[in-house]
Length: 393
Ligand code: PLP
Image (cartoon, rainbow, N blue to C red; front, top):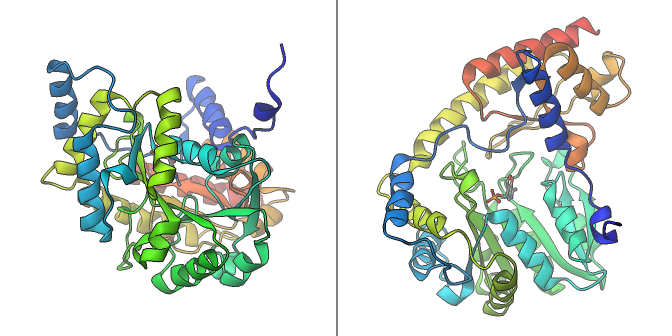
């Protein structure tokens, strides 16, 4: 039996490959430190878990509306108003099984065969694959390290042709932790308006910012930009709810309606009890992100300072998310390796530290280190990386 051509083109996830190897070593009894995690290491707050239990006890375990329960959409509307000064109607919001599935569904409804989507690199691994799955063509544009990994207006302009349908913006970014400021967003937005491009704004790390920079949604910059933008967000990262699978998209009614129609034939609806848990998350009086942010900020500083001491490792300090994305080309070369991928494999083999090679994010000179693990583990990991680099010099 043959697998479909569509699925055969999928690139296997490098993150998962490294995680699997690390897990295998752990099972053999090795003391492995995993810096590959893409999720907060905190538990989902008790009041959210309690709300899910209550929902179960109350029998709220049946199918719901395909696009999500109205109370939750209302809570999401309030969140947009409060955090982003954006006003959406309930018919401009769809609740999905994670932000990932919001993006998947979105590409399915906006792309025709060979439509192009501009994906600035470094990118989150699923963007190009999801575009391909929808029959589209991801156009990877290298956002350079000297521009803090941010797409410039000239680069955007030069990548547009009559097949271009959309641009993806992910700020704060996975894997770089970089953020676009208002001026940069306005410049990119103007070009998108000029060429009638949709803007897909993935804001899943909105709440995890460690500087004085304010998160800005490109949709809030003008009514024209709002009409052209689909905002993606969710509770996975903000409320430590990765396993619950809840995300959402907000944007023009026509697109949201098409997504809801597609969802009705694919997932039917996001898990009912998850929706009640998410409702509690957004209605809760305490914002659990405040505490998480404090801890993440401390860890970021610790790991950043330790990386600075490692010869041949250069890192721009991230502003948000929970990753560091250092350039390790000098270390790789000094250590006698051909590629970052080989260096990463040897680091895992010899020092039992799992990091993700940047190649999976379209950036083969870098590695991604997640600091969603304890401070002690981070200190030990940095120590082992330094030891590895010095040993091979
Ligand atoms: N967008 C980015 C940039 C991410 O890093 C992730 C998760 O890693 C997602 C979207 C998907 O989040 P969710 O768990 O809500 O599907």
